[in-house]
Image (cartoon, rainbow, N blue to C red):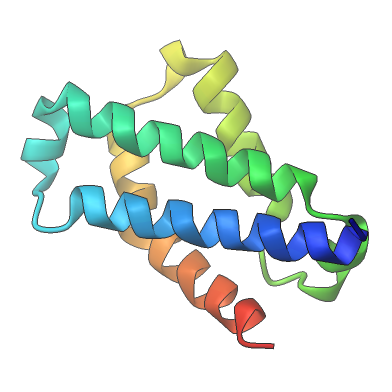
Length: 113
C-alpha cells in the first residue's frame, strides 16, 4: 500500500473518531459529561484513535495540510494515555466543544480534495 493510500485511510479514521465523539456528546451537557464515566471513557478512546491516526500520517501530507495541528493532536493523545492522571474533564469538554468542530471542518476539507 502506498503512503498516500495509508494517509487517506488515516484521515478517514480521524474523521470517524470525530463523528463518534460528536455522537457520544450530542445533547449532553457539561454536567452530564462530568458525571458519566461511560461517556468520558468512550470519548477519550476516540481521542486516542484520532491522535494515533494523526501520528501515522506521513510528513508529506502534514506539510500539505499545515492548518491541521498534527503535533497537538498527537500530544493530546499521549497526554490521555501516559499522563491520564493530569487530565481535567474540563479540558476534554473544551476540546469537544471547540477543537473538534474546527478539526472536523479541516478534515472535511481534506477529504473533499
